[in-house]
Structures are given as C-alpha cells and as structure tokens.
Image (cartoon, rainbow, N blue to C red; front, side, top):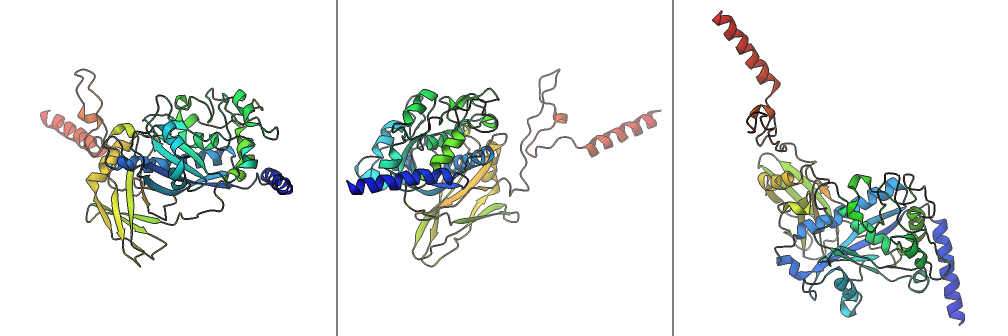
Length: 413
C-alpha cells in the first residue's frame, strides 16, 4: 500500500511538471512497420510509403511550429514484419501490434506505426489514450494503424498527409468532438478540451473526423490564433500539457537519426549521384534508398527501392547513380502537386533525420507545359508553348519574325 501511494505521488508530480514544462519542445520518436509481403506486392509501392511516412512527419512538424504546439516528431526505425500476411487492415493489424511476439517486435519508439490496408472508410486507427493511462501505464508505447496509399496524399489540395499527425494526437488523448473529449477525463484530473472545431476559415481543425475534406493549405489546430473563438476546444493547450508525458512512452531517446545523404547533379554523366554516410561502422549492413514524390495516385511517382551495401569499417557508401531521365519521370509526376520529389535512406539501426528534396538540386529539368488549344481549331497552338523543355516561343524569335516581316514589306514596295 505504501509503494502504491508513493507511485501515485510521483506520477501526480509528473503531471504537474508536464504543465510547467509546456514551454519546451517535446519529441516523439516514431517507427514504421509494414507486412513483409508488401515488398513484392505490385499494388504497394514501398518507396512511396516510406517517403510518405517521412513527409507526413515534416508536414506535422511544420504545422505544429506555426500553430504554437511544442512538439516535434522524429523517425527512428523502418522495418518489415514477417508474421503479417499483407491482408491486415488498419484495425485488425493495429490490434495485432498489441499481441504476443508482434507487440514486442513493434515496441520501438514512443509510437509505432503499422502500415495496413484501409478498412472501408477507416484510414487510420490510433491508440485512444485516457487521462488515467498516464498514471497507470506511463511507459506504454502507443500503436497506430495507418492505411496504405495515403501519406503522400491523393493528388490535389487534400489533407491526407495530415492523417499521421491526426492519429499521433489521438494517441496522446485527443478526440474528434466534445462528447468524446469528456470521456478522456476518466479520473477527474484530466482536461476536456482536446478535440476539433470549425475554425475561422470555415473548415474543421486537425482532429476533425472528416480530415480529407479540409484543403491542405487550410489545415490548422483548435486553440491556435486562427481557431480559438470557442475556448472549450484547445488542442494546442491540450497537446502542450500531455506531450511531455507521451514523450516517455518509450523510456529515454534512441537519437539514431544519424544517416547523412548527399545528392549531386552529375551533368557530365547525366545522373543524380547518391552517397549515404553512416555513423556506426562496426559491422556489414544493407541500407535502403527510397525515392518518391508527388501523390500516390500518379502511379509512376516513385522508383523501386535500392539496396546500399556497407562493409565493416566503411562509413560512406559507393555512389549510387540514377540517370536523369529516370528521375525526371518522378519530377514530371510531382510537378504541380503539394509534394516535391524526395530521397531518404534508412538502415537497420540508423535512419535519416529528414528528406532530401532532389528537385531542389536539379538545374536542368523543366516541367512540360501543355500547349493551349487554338480557339478556332481546338488543336494545340505551338505559339503558346509546349515540348519537353517547357518553354514558349522566345521574345527574341518574335522580334526576328517582326523584323523579317518589315523587310519583306519594304522589298515588295
């Protein structure tokens, strides 16, 4: 009885300290697991999924920083699970992550993301935590089910890349609406304002149950300066209070975001050259390079994963060369979308901290411009641009044509 009393006092103090620490930024380390059969399933593009995982983290961090949420997400691990068949959906797969050997295997990071098929309209399934869980299960790694073909978005101005951050905040304790938020406070010591509301722009905030209906650029969070006319909904304050506690779901930090990727535009060889550097050189290791961009609906928005082999003692990889035209195909698919084209390398024990924007390194590729149709014939008008260079008829050419026309008039006279 005495031990239990001391434990409750210590955990109550931790609750109090989390409020006082609200001004500092908390870090959640996230791992990603997927069924091993996805590696040879043509309907699943692992490059798109892994890059999408990273991109969703970056999108979340940007939103948190702009809206006053003191939270940063970091990747920490990417791996397959051999016991999964590839037929699991976000709910059945998520449940399996709490069962037996799979529960142990996926206990990596503060939150573990399982990549599964959607279950009807359900594309994410978080670990719905309540206030009492922070007292009785303070170091219980959260498990999240996330649907395939979502994290890079579906094309156009949609908010599918925010599904990951939506489920992460569910796993902190956030709810969709006020009635559910009241249920979070199951021990009468928690908050009841962790839910969504309609914001000043007329759209629902991050925790809305219909997240896909919110335009990407309009996403915000209740409690932010552009979404605080109803004080009873305050996801900013809610997250800032509970994030320091949730950051201890896995005791300590892995801090293994140590892979560095250098990408060079090699004009002489007409290739993009990729070199990965690792921190731990003590053993042989196979890492994987993923390249993808744009949106998942494009089909050709990603390249096949490429293995990068390291020998014992080797810090920098051999150069991986990918020809311009191969990468340009992804550039074309990504052009006009909310995402660029990115590269990332992950290993068994180390991961890259953030994506490398390959498009930003490019100096030669230009987007293809579809010619405007001639208003009389309906056929493409070459004077309005077109062709692989993306250029239109130059001003110099028009001036030269004008000069020739004047010369011919003078001669005819």
